[in-house]
Image (cartoon, rainbow, N blue to C red; front, top):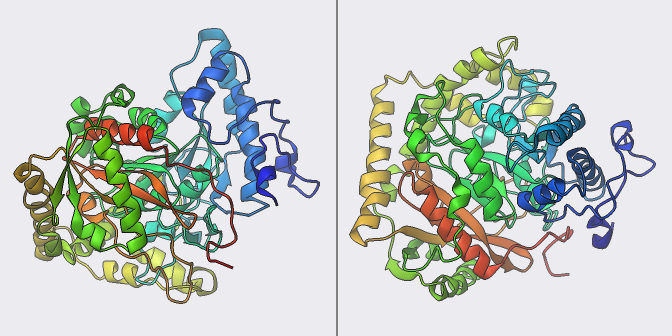
Length: 530
């Protein structure tokens, strides 16, 4: 399929399309959703140019053309059968009362580890939870519905959010198959929010929500020329998200521009009685769109983390080096930082914490959100996988699940010592220390390496990334599109203190507006020279 055809909004399903797709009404003439922002679409709906139902139909047609046929990205694991009815209801409400806010009628995709109490499943990509409808909405889903967003569907992911195997292939789940990158179909999407990244890059919805424990928002976002925000842990409720480790887990926006990410974060953020860590979010949650300042870099002291440049290929390092000049041109003061101190001291203990917390927290999720599922513990998941080796274990194993199952409880000295170690060296003797010593407003570095060739035999070859310090600390991290190398995207990261989302959003927006590096994908078969 030629790219110009892919970019036509108003593409309808072919004669071979499913009954679901052929039932979709033709998108209104002139309705262009490719690269469209939430604010642009909201303004057009407010002016009566099209309805939320027509917007949903346009995305459904595009999903049929790109995700289900054409390049077949497999980024969306399930569509919401009620999306059109929800959109119609919101259209009637708009006519009667006006819009609820910036997300009224805006289609949003959710990663398939976020519980929705509707006709969709919540499975983390695993066949073990196939058929399991959640008993309750995740708190963030409640907030999206209250804001008038249309939950369009669930996105594919690295199964169990990439906590299953030491030799996993990111973007693959037994339920959803392999998600492909729209920039080069043979390259990996990274993970675990693979489908959220691929679908956003291909304009299959306006907004998407991913989740991260370490790199699962920021890494796939950087490889898809997207903005990804991993918030401070506790800013967004984790209630109703299939967990890995509550000490590091968080949901966050994955979007095509900073303004969309700010608007989405505004809705997602806030305290939840079911997530005690979010109590601190009460004063921190606010309208993040207020911080979209094109002068947001003026006078800011940014620490350039040189160890991260050295960890990347020359191609990535040179690309991001050029972007430092954009930061300077916008008034930022760049300060050389050799490295974030003490990162080696939690290189091993991070995984220790994740495995202990996975074993303890998964049964708690299952008991509340999947009470009727036969799967009620990590041991049940392991047994299911073993019994269904031909589907679940055909590409790689479950070594991490087995190691987690062998761990003790959260009162184990090994766990308590590791957690204290990680927090000390990632926070006060890590990010906080370097920011204070150099009087910095944020740290900047390449988000990570270029997308690697997908390889089911050897697994991921992702290289080094800048995700771990902020992930272990529980601090905010924003990646912004920073250009391309041989047609493959890379990202520039901004990392700051806890609850510094307003300042980071201002800096990220100023950089984005000055650089304009985001580009729509071309659906190349390969980025390799012929």
